Amino acid sequence: MSGVITIIKDLVIKAQFDSDPPSVNELVVINNGFETQLLVDHLEPGGVALCLNIRGDKRITKGMQVDRTNKSVEIPIGDITIGRIMNALGDPLDGQSAITGKDVVMKDIFKMPPRTTDFSIGSPEILETGIKVIDFFTPFVKGRKIGIIGGAGVGKTVLTMELINNIAKADSGLSFFSGIGERIREGHELYTTLKENDLLKNTVLFFAQMNENPVQRSLVGVSATAAAEYFRDEQHKDILFFADNMYRYIQARNELSTILDQTLNEGGYEPSIFSDVKSLQDRLSTNENGSITSVQTIYVPADDTSDPAVQFIQHEMDSIIVLSRKIAEQGIRPAVDLNATTSSLLTPDIVGERHYLLSVQVQALLQKHESLKGIIAIIGENELSIADRTDYAKAKKLIENFSQNMSVMTKYTGVPGDFFSREDTLKSIEEIVV
Image (cartoon, rainbow, N blue to C red):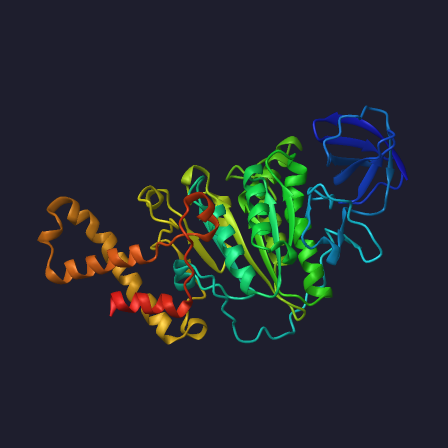
């Protein structure tokens, strides 16, 4: 049941077990007086366990004894966690007491619930976000996934905070937020916003910001997902799951792959990137017990949307909202690229005939606007035909119509935020298009 440390390399520690080696994802503890925890990443021939130093503890030397625990990473789950902030290991980050008590359940974050396929999802339920561009182009459907894609500083986190503020207020379900490798400032702003709007009472938060080591950054999304599964399956709650940022999850896995001396794939990412992302996304699903509706931001490195990691995460989403730096520079907020934003849920069966036909008309006008911009730059708008000038003017009005003030930015700008019902959004578009 015990081994000995043979090699220490940054966060990677090798331990030799002469008999009964640990299992993958098992926690082992170093007998150094501090109970330092290691997570077994994989096993090598000869009883060698390759482990990850979860907390980055430096009080480790070669020759120390390592003891098996026969369990994996377990986090506290239960009503007591609502309104609390935890790290990937379930430790509180809000300065309050440890999460313990008779009602607390310890959940293995790697243990997946049994798959169920023999249930009926029922008719789709649309949740109103109050944000025109989302409600019109990417309807927020219960139990589905929305991805918000964009480079640094184009408003991904602000849009996510606005969605939390608007949807969580109107929805009776439970909200989860997983902060993966983002700025500490943004995490603090989110916590303050939730507290000021009295939303902490329905929210569970997990954070591993960019100051944490890659082990915790790669685990925090898994921990938050495991917690969401518990409330969905055991308490039959509908879950709103927000993740900021899914690309940082891949980035953390990539860092681990590098220190583990693994050969990268053709795209320059860890060899198991696709299975890692797929496994996590499959757990954010709906079953007969309840639903998990997720909003995930996806950072685009160097504004390159063709990046293989970005492309793969997109394939797991039902709707994609693309934020553009060019549009942000024009002062339009939210800075959504209306031509690149897509949704597989924008169908007559889900949004209705009226909404669907309007979307077809709007997309046609926006595409025509894009094609006419080059011509106008050469000959001027006055040289266009009357029909083209009319359509171009309508498209400009539509673009302006989809811009709105965010409630979460009011304390910085002094401008009250806007909230539009889906009916108001459709009426405002009909006034321009029809």
